[in-house]
Each structure stands twice: as C-alpha cells, then as structure tokens.
Image (cartoon, rainbow, N blue to C red; front, side):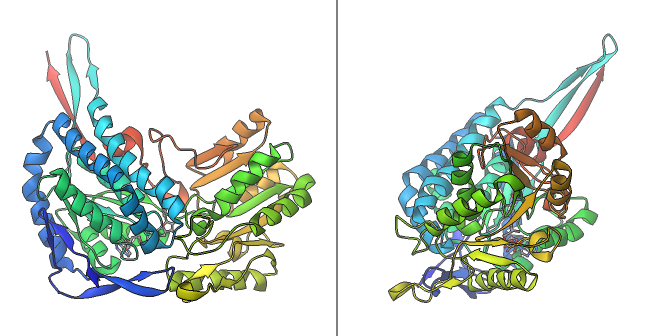
Amino acid sequence: MQKLQNYIDGKLVEPISKVYIDNYDPSKGEVYSLIPDSMKEDVNNAVVAAQKAFPGWSSTSAEKRSQILLRISSLIESNLDRLAEAECRDNGKPISLAKAVDIPRAATNFNFYATAILHYASESHAMGDLGFNYTLRQAIGVAGCISPWNLPLYLLTWKIAPALAAGNCVVAKPSEVTPMTAYLLSEICIEAGLPAGVLNIVHGYGNKVGAAISAHPDIPVVSFTGGTETGAEIARIAAPMFKKLSLELGGKNPNIIFEDCDFEKMIETTIKSSFSNQGEICLCGSRIFIESGIYDKFKAAFVAKTNELVVASPTDQNTNLGAIVSEGHMNKILSYIKLAQEEGGTVLTGGNQVTLSGEYSNGWYIEPTIIEGLSYDCRTNQEEIFGPVVTLLPFSNEEELLIMANSTKYGLSATIWTENLSRAHKLAAKIHAGIVWINCWLLRDLRTPFGGVKNSGVGREGGFEALNFFTEPKNICLKL
Ligand code: NAD
C-alpha cells in the first residue's frame, strides 16, 4: 500500500514516529494509502528548514520567484489527469468536477500569484519640502498554511502561492482526510526546482501538526481555512502570541429568490449552488429564501430537477454527486436530516443514505435532500451541515427576509436573484456577508477580496489582499 511522505527541506521523508494513519477512498469505504502521523518534532524540522531557506528565497528577485512558480503551475497543468484522479479518489468528488474545477484552479492559483507579484507595488507619502515616506512591503518569514478537505489542492495552493510569491517560506498542513494531491504537489515542486526548504508539507492530524504550527514561536503568520471551531482554537493559541492570522471559516449562506428573477437561469444555478461537490463547499447556498408568490412554482421545478441528479461512483463521467468525504461526515449529515424532521421539517426529496452496488457498495453516499416547513431560527437553519441538504423558506417582504437571512452567526456569502437591480444593490449592502453574488453563484475574479464576516472569518484572501497579508509594511521616513 502506498505510503505518503512529508516534504521537508526539499526531500520526501518519513515521519519521525514512523507511524501512519489510514487514508480512505470514500467511494468504496476502504483504506487505500497511508499518511504520516507527524508530531511536533516533524513541524520543528520543517520550521528549521524554512528558516534556513528564508534569507535566500526572500532576497531572490520577484522575476526569478515568479519563473519557478510558473513552472509549478505548468507542471500541475501537464499532470491534470493524474491529479484529478487522485483528488477524485481521495475526496469522493466527481472526476468531472476535479478535472474542470479543482486542478485547473490549483494551476491558476500559482499562475495568478506568480504574475501578481510582478505588479505588486508599495506606497510613498510625500510631505512637501519637509520630507517623504515610503513603505517597504517585506516578506515576514515562515508562514503556516492549514487547509481543509473539501477542495484539497485548490485551497492549499490558494494559500501557498501568495505566501511564496511574496518571498516567505512555508510550512503547510493539508487535511489528513485528503492528503494525496498535496503529496503529489511536493513531487511537482521538486521537479520544478523549488529550492529546498522554501515549501515544506507536514502531514498528520490537526491536533498534533496543526496545533504545533499554531503554537510555533518561529511561525509569525498563519493562514487557515476550515471549520469555525477549529479557527477559534487556532486564534486562542496564536492571538496571544501576536501572530498575523487569516481565518476562512464556515458558512450558512442564504440564496434569495425574488418573483421577478430569470427563473430558468436561477433554477439551473440553484441546483449547482445547492449540491455541487455534494454540498461540501463553504459557499453553497444552504438556506433558500423564496418570495411567496413563486414558492410553489419554485418548489415543483427545484424538486423535479433535483430528482434528475445522479448519485454514483465519482469515477463515472455522468455522476452529479459522488461520495461524502468520510463515514463520520456522512453520519453527521444524516443526523442533521433527522434533526430537521424532529424540528418539524418535511423532506420533499432525498433524506437517505444511498447504497451503490458492486465494488462501491461500502461507499458513503447521500441523496440530494430538500426540506421545507422549518422556522428560520431552528438548529437546522442556524448550523452548518456542509452536505447535500438545503431548506426552503418563504418570505413576503424584504424586512422579514433580512431578519431571517442575517439571523445566523455566519456571514460568508449570499446570492440574490432578481431582475430589479436597484433592489439587488440595496439588499446586497444590507446582507451580513463578505461576498454577494447577484444573478450568479461562484463567479470568481481572483483579484477580488475573498472572506467572511462574523463567525465566517477574519481577514481577506485574493488579489493584493493576500500579498498584503503575507508581507509586513515598514514605513521609512526621510527628512529633507
Ligand atoms: P477542520 O476545521 O476540521 O479542519 C481544517 C484543517 O484544520 C485540517 O487540516 C485539520 O487537520 C486542521 N485542524 C484540525 N484541528 C486543528 C487544531 N486544533 N489546530 C490546528 N489545525 C487543526 O475543517 P474541515 O472539516 O477540514 O473543513 C470543513 C470546514 O471548512 C467547513 O466548516 C467549511 O465551511 C470550512 N471551509 C471554509 C472555507 C472558506 O473559504 N471560508 C473554504 C472551505 C471550507
């Protein structure tokens, strides 16, 4: 069975403990590879390697750093099939999605920041005859990057690329649930000629490797994407050490549908915003608010379209929903469906585990599920489920809608469907969210600020925001 290795100081190495964790193929519910069960000492070794590499990498010209990152980007592109197959097997997501979204986006992340760094400039503030100031934006040192399992290579590279482009060295920790593409990335970095120690990838559990990164005194900056509770735990450790922190956390996003929307476009996109990646995207619109006048029309059309979705092996080209990432997560989703029924909800379609036949019979699958009849403030409508489960809630005016839409502790994203753009803009300004889509969903321009408010996070990724995060501004004042 394949044993993954840590990537430390430019080499693929065993964990110090020599102990490995089982890695599951969720489509079959069986172990198919082994992940290093790393400890604090492995993280220490990675930090030493990163510190050793930092003076060289941070003083390498932006052009040279850019060239190496572009090589990584093109190697990801040329390994598209291999990486997509690995992501599909490790996570359970449909192969079509991994090929069209996850892996191309990982290549784009490197490409985007490899070129962004060439256009990154800092400010100067003139004081007339008195003098002037200029701001240096300097790499900080060793950055810690911790990422989740839902978009494994996509989100890992979204952190690593700006950190490296800005001249930092990195100690990264991918999710222990989906480590495979991070391991393949370490092979790619070696092939691309990334100098030893510039990027280190340490595999293992969050409460060992992740906690060691959060607490390490020589990691002054931590970028984390994952659950809100984990983010709070990282902040508890890192904030008193005055580390720079970026936290991208959970969501419970409203998808708001007005009577005057373009119905066909809305239905087509709402199917995607509800069930893409088995609903395991932080930006999925899990609470669907529908203006009363079209509630019945929407319900009929949405249930009919949902019933056409194919739940099957992720390797099948026609699959719409693949496997849920782990047995534990599948059980969590199923327990929320049960809770919704206990809270008085009616399951309009779905609601059950799916058992496939043959070699996939032990895999973890759930039907796309639509629930109605719940109050906006019940647990089902307040807590993140992170699976193929959405609720329908009617509304009759904007005042009522805003109270319901803004009622959760989260504030990541929202979608508004209306042809009345004046209304859309006014509403967008009042919604508690870091990202609002009008008449679309997940339309991304990588230059825009990405992140959430309230318990969905602190800080913004994307564009120059990420380069600002991974650099420290230093003002230099000269008196003339
Ligand atoms: P998670 O919080 O369980 O794990 C995320 C990462 O943190 C993993 O690598 C994990 O090993 C590590 N970790 C766990 N405990 C840790 C600790 N004590 N200290 C340091 N690191 C620790 O999240 P998950 O289940 O992998 O991912 C799902 C969550 O991620 C959902 O809540 C989802 O909304 C969120 N998410 C947010 C965004 C965003 O951009 N806001 C994007 C994707 C996913």
